Length: 109
Image (cartoon, rainbow, N blue to C red; front, side, top):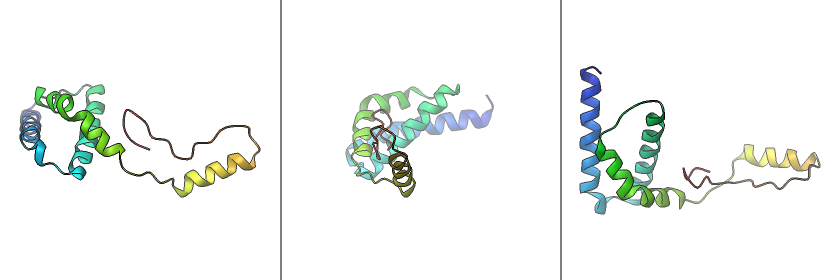
């Protein structure tokens, strides 16, 4: 990679190390944000990116805690979800409709 790649790699390494240092001071909202960052790292790994081992440490030591913080938020179905459910019901289809579903791995609804 080029110098920018090295810069970003080092920056991510320092960020992850700092997260571990201050983990006891992180707010619920910060843990929710951290969960989203860890998910984005997972997506980048799938596309061939590499990350410092400190990111894996954050995921191992805090991943579950951050997922719980993120998925602990109340969910609310959107107008679109309500409209789709209504359309399916009005079509007379014999299907069970779950208007709001939360993915266990990502925590997203």
